[in-house]
Structures are given as structure tokens and as C-alpha cells.
Image 1 (cartoon, rainbow, N blue to C red):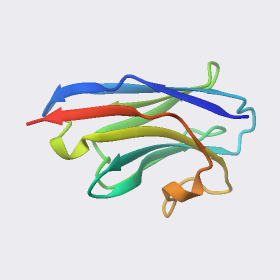
Image 2 (tube, rainbow, N blue to C red):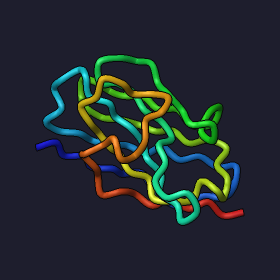
Image 3 (cartoon, rainbow, N blue to C red):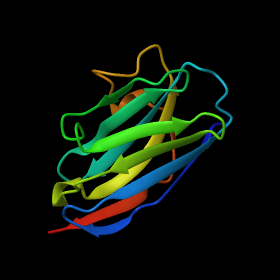
Image 4 (cartoon, rainbow, N blue to C red):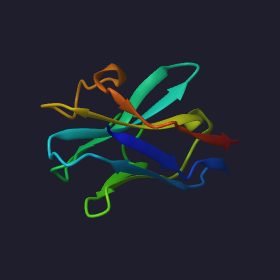
Length: 126
């Protein structure tokens, strides 16, 4: 059973930064797609970044490009999301998600993922 555990959320002012972490267990295959999914009242759950366990290429949503950086520590099975120049619209619950998929970019959506962490709250004040 895949288990995902997020940490690192908190409250920051606009322009500030946070780094989220997601520890994963039982993911040994290189064809898992890992993602950060943000949940907001306005947009529901949207994928903001994704990366294959077996690769290094990352995909970002338009709202995340240039500000967020996803990376992974493959040796320790940890996924990161660095959020920079944060804005109030970045406020939401950030989930780590995983799924065994043949794709991990472009049209990927939250419903593609079947493993989820408990989420971590991120609040950005203006």
C-alpha cells in the first residue's frame, strides 16, 4: 500500500516562500507519476506540478511556471515543492499524489491519481 505524507505548509506573506515535502513509501517502480495537487474553493483540485519517479523532467501548470519547482530525492523517496513569490491565490490545501501511469504531464488531472497524502495547508496573506 502506497503511503504519502506531506509536511512544510504554513502561513506566509505575499512574495514569500515555502518548501513542501512528501515522504513516500512502497513506491519502487519507475513508472509512477508523482504530483502536487492544490485544492481551492475556486478551482477545486488542480495539478500544479508532476514528475515521474524514474525521470527528472517536470511539468508545471501555467500558474506554477516560473515560481514553483518540483524535485525528488530518489534515494530517500521524498518529493519536494518549492514555492516562491507566493501570492494570495496560492492559498489552499496542497496534496501529494501518486499513480501508476504511462503519462505524467500535459492533460493530467487530479482524478488520474489514486494515492493521496493527507494534505498540508498553505496560506498566503496580502
